Length: 370
Image (cartoon, rainbow, N blue to C red; front, side, top):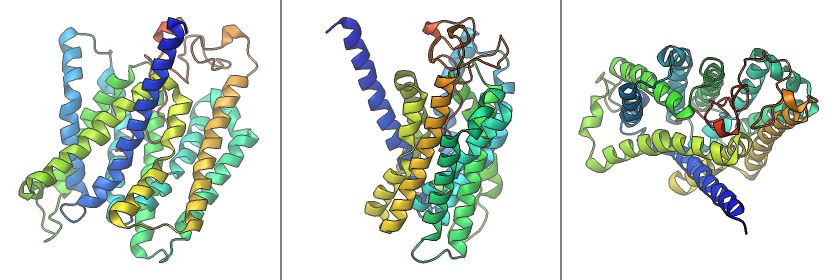
């Protein structure tokens, strides 16, 4: 076996490891949040988790500032995505206080519908995908499967469940807006740098919301997030661990998996999150989905996969000469301005294959969940 083949196999092996670690990290987030509901409220959970995460992601930015190599306009570019990300994170943390983790994550699959339609509306190069049979079929599967999974809740949709599902779907909508804003305003910025900047602004916003809205879950009295100070060491450790695993390491592994395996494969694997969350929730919290709910839930996940496949296939099949294709991912540049970066991988038109992974790819489904 040649050295090049060995290196390729090693790279794929590392990519597989990182995408599995991403899935594990993002599986843990709804479980952590659900376990916190009896100790402190969602505003407190978010404020502390993102405050800790902001500290984790601060050193790369300080190093870039010291070396004077931070991208020009980084903070201005990050501002608009954060205006969507802050309320998205707030709703995401609220949902487990009203519904169990499995049903919550299946409800979040609506995000791919919002994201795909939004991309088709905002980016001319992708508008053709919304008319393709595969895209339409995938969207219908996501909508039908998700709605059926929600409606087939064995105990019916009581007031709490309706509110929880609505909050989860709202979080999915806002996450889609966040992902589209990242793609529009932060294209070309290294993904890790972009996320670090977004994390700082989001952290400030969520800490501010905690100080304004945080209440003691037992008394209902405002405490600005101070209830965490009365936790045992092990409980506070779990809170800190949820920030490190879900937000810090989760996103790092995700970006690494995209670099090794590509966007399509990494995004497809992450679509399994509702399944892994539901299985874990069964063993930890006793959450039970009926066989019919499992069937319709898998139908929704399959639909998400079909949407991703339709987007990828159409991009690869576009009848454009090689000169009008991205040098790295093969995405058609037909209809794009000559100086525009590739919408798929972020490569500049004058770039070469060595730039692969340096551009900021459009944030796919689940990329922001945390």
